[in-house]
Image (cartoon, rainbow, N blue to C red):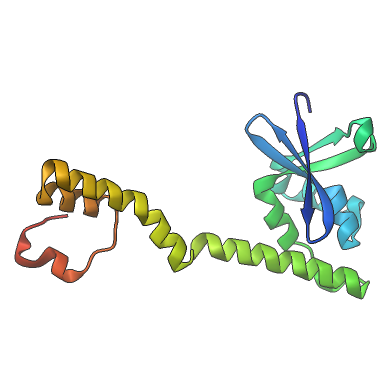
Length: 168
């Protein structure tokens, strides 16, 4: 991988490697496998045999400062899917199995929070939109502000539409 920057990431006390190449971020699976006590070779084969994961897989040799070894890299957006596919029941070592489960729980939590943001996150996201609506109200009046409010998808209540004054 030419023109690559490398980052060391501390995740749950494990040192993981991430690589940025252009707009893409890749994660080395070797350190994750070692941290989880699972076979790099078996996971590499699993990734190569998976139609989606294999699309985001590449192999590189680390610079000497990072050990100079060959690494299997997986595009960042595919890492959670790969981790979900590890069968924790097949991990023989109890501590390693618990670590696999901890990583997977973290993936589930991240996935959930993506689709179910906290109320505070939602309100914070509305802030800039509400400020824009307030500015439009000052410049163009109540009717324009109401139309923009609806168009931006801000929360509305039934009384907001009373008397048929506004149409969606």
